Length: 362
Image 1 (tube, helix red, strand yellow):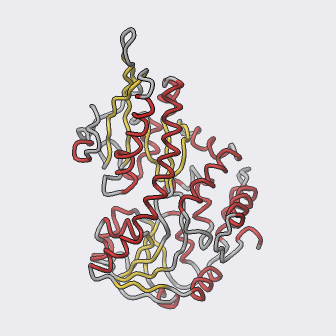
Image 2: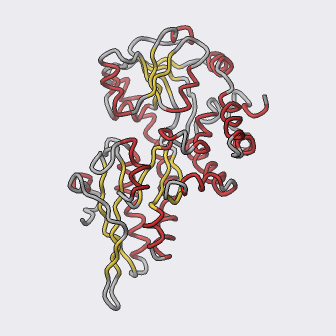
Image 3: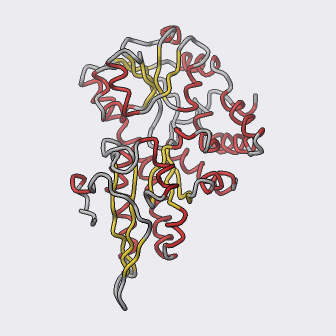
């Protein structure tokens, strides 16, 4: 199915479409057409899916059009058409898609090295720096790409799609003591950020939080403003504690290894280059949309409280050293947890980030 340029309404293919792997057709002297299926369980309500359709795919197409040797016939299967939110990694492994966005935070057991930013809160709120730093680590530590290879995938880049985690709640929270007994939804390793002051972290996913807040399953969520504003979660969680907990790289852009191997070198090069541009675009959009999202929340009755620096320092110091625990667990598996942590923190220190706690030096 062909792309309809920059038209999200026509970008979706029929539900249930299945990827058959990369297929190519051409005639002598003509442009070779390559069929590829892109997948994610999230819909166009998610910024990174909109940017995949509106930025990443056109960037690839433009690079290939420069020579005219190849073009891609895209089958875009988002919003659960082929896989659910947590199913992208297994879907790509099974060949249900050729390329997609893996939400790595859901796969801490399979992709533990990908979780480094989740292990280091109160370090940076610069998503571009986080994403670039992790790609640097992926070049320095082979174990990162090897983790994806075990599941039949080629790592292309990562994505930091949020400026900073904040707290959004049904009742006002202004200090750590207000968390006592509250059930707070989030996902992955950052649930440990809630330990030490009486909150109960509850694992979940972005698409379920509205109903869980509405029905009382959750009292609060730890998310970023763009995601809350985009899904109108301020209707059920109108209070915001702006604590600037930190940015993370929650996404990975990967390709099915068998599909990737079939691609001509020129096409691989175009996709890799566009993937890095997409990575940087996501970070830019995360920052650009944050202020507007806070404004939208406020305009719809939201009440925002900014935690002072003393409160943030107290929070950072009360939680366990998540980073050291993360690194130690990796070392037991023969993975370079300590070296990665030091390298990551060194990069953040060199970039003069407002680090509250030197996680690797304790």
